[in-house]
Length: 314
Image (tube, rainbow, N blue to C red; front, side, top):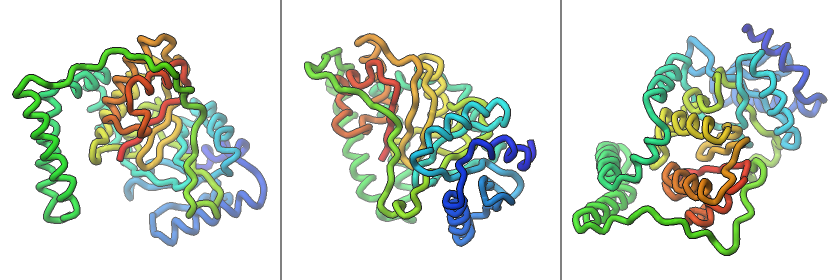
């Protein structure tokens, strides 16, 4: 599909009005000033082409008013079978990485070799956690000369490694927590939360990317999400999201620099199912998601019948 053909399909569902077109032009002008290599669409920059390399485009983006973001997203999602591009909300900052189609294919091939559920179970194995932390420490030591600020992170990782090794040595590794349902259930997560930073208030726009993926779980491969600190690599995100897509009908809707938000068509309907899912999600996000909600029991009650899932990595 050519760029003009894509525009003809999408243009009718995009917002109208001079104010919105000025927003698009302003965003495009800023990107050109930053020399990020995008090209302006002939029709008021309604779609901006973001190049993953000099030979091929990774994705398109468009900016929409905040109050129309979800409605435009849903319309773009319905058009995906015709356009071959899936939408994902990038938020007010509109920041993400990118991979060329060839790089994305390699990541997806690696993801196909990973069983998402088994990966989660493997992370709970104390010995495998120790091996993973050793790899992380080795990477930090190699990067320390170029980035001395990593010294504190390295020291924390080394202390954690000693604690884990001591726990395995004396047989005191923690067992998987048993279900302990809270007396006061959490009300759950409701709706996609668009983080609007103060610096972005003047623009009043939300970025939606159009990604050449066949399934929402493939999007992290095209937008290069993951691979820092405790955040899993791109292929792991794809494998785990694929598993939850098949099990719960979970689809990636929003991706910011350090968060993922999913809409779920078949959420857990029993306490037992929600508890197991809470264990899995806390393993996936390393007990970092939503601060106080990292307690498994509270997270489990929040996930029960919830159609919205949220993940954050530091």
